[in-house]
Structure formats: structure tokens, C-alpha cells
Image (cartoon, rainbow, N blue to C red; front, side):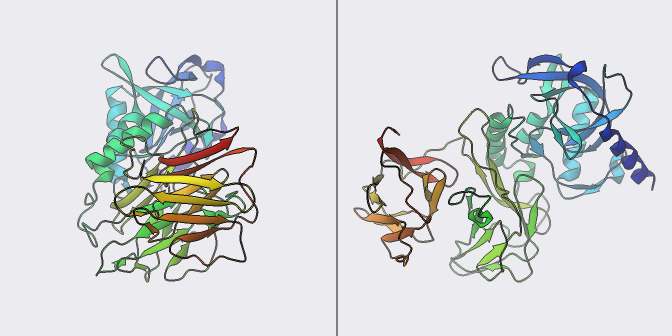
Amino acid sequence: MRRLTLVLVLLAFAAVPATADAAKRGRCLMRSDGPTCFIWSGKVTFVADGDTVYVDIDGDGTRHAYPVRVTGINAMEQTTYTTRASQRRGECHALEATARLDQLLKASKYRVRLLAIDPASTSDRRLRRSLAVRSHGRWRDVGRTLVAEGNALWLANGREWAWNRDYRVLQDRAQRAGRNLWDPMYCGLGPDDGRQIPMLVNWHGDGSDWLDTNGEWVRIKNPDPAAPLPLGGWWLRDSGPRRLKFPSWASVPPGGEITVYVGVGDDNESELYWDQKKPRLDDVSHDQRAMGDGAFLFDPQGDLRSATVYPCRVNCSDPASGALQLDATYRGQESVRITNSGAVPIDLEPYKLVSPPYGYSFAQSSVVQPGETMRVRIYEPEEDDDSALTRYWTPGHAILDDRGDILELRRHDDVLVACTAWGSRSC
């Protein structure tokens, strides 16, 4: 009851706005480039969990402690919030993230700097701020440390975007090194440990995701030719807190796959639905905001068993680059031709055709042998029976602009593999 009372009192402080009046201006990043931020100083009065603290902000004319959501990261969920570390409770990795954050703050005597591009940025009535502590005479970005050490996931934000690109790269390095969250056996022995579980993430459908939420999907594959992959009790999430828990009967057949659609539908053995009323997988942005997202598959005990994060930022070459040739017919009956000029067969399932805002994803076993051409015919709803080397892309109308347009073949993590353009456009 005392812990609950403390949390309720602290939440009440969220109603008190923190304005830009007490802020200075300076660089958002700990280097000379990047955007300018509003910067506040203050003292942390309570560490709630691995991504939320309460801060008494200097110079705001109050002694209130504001709830602050750390920009750019998402720690695992905690269920019991208290100043006593021994009494905290939460999911696997949650308490480790809280303890590490508390350690960083303690070394700075709980004095912090808060940074924001937009002083009005909030998240669930919490101020959204980048958090920095003083260490060895320099300010140290807390979010950067937590992501680099694998204690939190990267959570891109379109409003507070200065940290997106750096955190994405740091997460990739943590994942490759198997640090903390990225250690698939950190939480102990679990079901089917050691199994490879590839995933494809289609973060943008054909047209507007707001009109067709099921255009966003996650495909979970089982490369084992003999054993099924039971998923009962497992759960899937994006970089945010939203998650889908798999029913007890869910299973990926040997050599097969299941698809999780973000929107609403009736579950069956090969298709599950997240029942979200709006898009959840953030789109990639090819601008300074460097937006992206990911899909994360956890087993029942909380181990992260598979993840696909996009866009790719590190080691992004693809073996099919140069081997796949792309061509388009854009006048009359539109179509796309993908020719394999390489020496080995190439399965197109990991790739998609992109002509913004439209996209076409290939089904399982879309193999093109050396010298063969896959043809994708556009807008022929009366002829939609795919065959080995003929596919049908049916957005409902023609999509290629005769005056000038661009068509790309991209990997699902946004790596460009091939491109063709005409008229006023260029690759």
C-alpha cells in the first residue's frame, strides 16, 4: 500500500507542465553536429524503472518532481516500483535495466541534464527527454549506454529524432555481441533453445497502412525440416510495449512459416491476427529523422529468441546485389521483370518490390534460377493465379507513372538490391 501511494503521488505531478522558460539551448548530441535542443538541469528523486525517472527541474519555480520518459529506449516491463531494489519485481531484464540506470545516476549524485528538440514532447503524461549524467567531468548519454549494453531496446521517435540513427547502430552492435537482452539463454533454459527462427517484417503494406492494417505483418519461419516449432505462450512485440501472446495451439510446421497480421481477422493454423486498430510497425524514413522499428519474439520465460530490426545500418551488403536485374513496363499493361544474371538460384522471399506508396512482397519459395526471369504483372485482378515465374500484384489500379517513376527491389530491412527508373526520375 505504501508503494502504491508513492506511485500515485508521483503520478499526480505529471499534471504540472515543465515549460521552456528554465531551459538553455545547445547541441542535442555529445558532438558538434546534429540539431539543437532545449536543455534543463535537475535532480532525480525516484528511479521508477529502466526508462522512467522523476526529476526536480532546476529553475522552474516549483519543487515538484516530473515523470520523465527517457527518449529513444524501451526497457522491459517492471511490475513493482519502489526505492528498495530488493523489492522490485518485473519481467526478465527489467530489474537489470533499472539497477543499471540507478547505478549511472548514483555516480552523478543523481544530478542530470534533460534534453529535447521540442519542449512539449510527452509520452503518456511523462516528459519525453534524453537523459545525461556527469561522469569523469563529461556528460554521458544514459540512453546510449543502456542500448549499447543491451539493457534496453531502441525505440525510434519521430518528434525527438536526434538519437535515432546512433541508437540503431548501437543496438545492432549489442545484438551481434549477444549482450544482456540479446543473449537468447539469459533467462535460463527454455523451449527449443538453440533453434534458428528467422523472421521477415513487412512494415509497409500496399498503399496506406491506415486503410489496410493487415498490410503490416511478421512472418515467422521454421527452417527445421523435421521438427515443428511450438509457440504456445510465446509473445511478439514491436519496439514499443504492444505485444501479442500466442495461443497454446500455435505452431510453425517443419520447413514452414506462419504470418502474424497486425490488424483484425480470424486466426487459423498459418495466420494469426494482432487485433490492432491502427498501424503499429513504424515506417522507415530516408531523412534526418532516421525512423525505423522492429519485431521481437520472446519465449515464455522472457528470452529474446528472434528479432528483425529495420532499417539495416551496419554490414548491409546483400549477395543478390548485382545478380538481380530489374526492368519495368510502365505503358499499357504494367509489369516488372526480375532476372537472375548470377550463377546460383535466388529466393525472392526476403525481398519486396517498392514503388511508393505501394509494395509487393514475395511468397515462400519464390526461387529464380540462373538465367530465369520472374515476371510480376500489375493490376490484373481477373488473372491472379500465381505460377513459378509469374506473379500478380493487384493494388486495384495502375501505379507506374509514364512521365517518370522509380521502382526498387529492397530487402525487408530496407537494403536496396536493385533499381530501375525512367523519365524524370533516377535511381
